[in-house]
Length: 453
Image 1 (cartoon, helix red, strand yellow):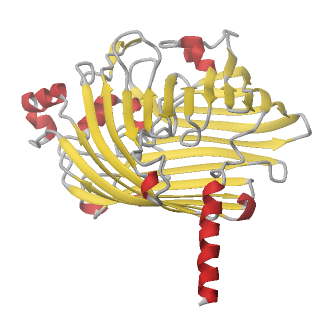
Image 2 (cartoon, one colour):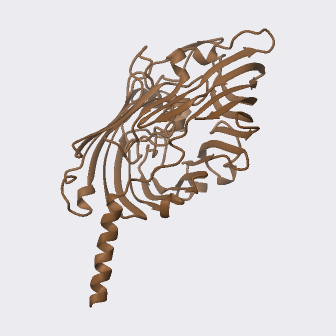
Image 3 (cartoon, rainbow, N blue to C red):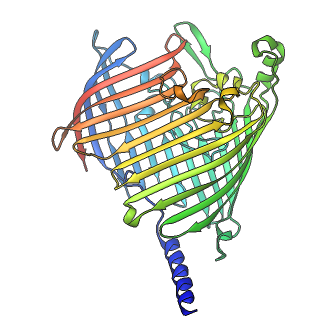
């Protein structure tokens, strides 16, 4: 009996100790470097020589990353200005400006690249990016604010270029009704309501004339959702959470009219509101002193007709009209979402995720695969890469680069304390200067200064 009592007491102390610990912090979040790289860049069929100055600083809760391109055409010596055309122009040099850590601090605000952002638990906005290529980078705003531990607000705005109408706006007010109590589990209960709206009417002057991929969004595109989540277990080694989400994609009026007026273009399929439901669990495991950290999520999803989970993802900003058209004829189905990531010894960080409909081979829905890799210096080498591919009907095509893929890979070698050499590669499928869509490749071998501060 005494032994049992001791075990129970130790378990209680262990759990309470775990709640007192700080949340896991990645060793990759607080790096300070000053980098200036001289290299040769191939963009399409043109060659450029020049610098990219890319300092990155983290001081307390503030973080700043810049990307200042100074590229000159190898043939005529002209400065390349395409990266500053349209939208916010030179503000694109701010890769990010951040205060706080999302879901860790009461105030989190970020300006710049929104790659990887999600709203709430991710059923509507997940794996999002507003930076589909160097030339199409937008400067957005993300925020997560919580007041007195109970009332919070998440917000994402895709583009602070205020010319034209409203761009993608995502809002999620949430409430933690029992956060100030000491009731186990229930004190972590979180209830949220999501709203996403986009009225983008952007048109671009190209060599082929005025082009647009916002025919369907200019009159408004919207979605709503509700969710609930709770932390089931939290101690020094393990954090386990559960959530459930319901989302609804409202019928887009312009697309609906197009389907009615051009039925042969859509093979006679129908289009209306679409909705879906998902529930899942997420586990975070860390070994002593964060020597090893593992994050895993598994989610069961039910898709209604004309619905796609994580609809506002990286593909949305590539071509909004094409993304909306994917909803037409999307069949009722179900599937899974999985994510697995780990950080080892503070040196290697890797994460993979997958959205996989049931019976993929016979489904008219595609799978989505994502991979992220980041390392510190190991034997003088360092690597960073992101890869995402959607609309997969065959997982065997996962690593075939085509119009459904986005990739950015950087590999460097430190020559000495101040110098490094590397290769920076980007693959995307985006709108070109002539108004057509196609593959955009950028290959940049370089030698430059990289100083750890």
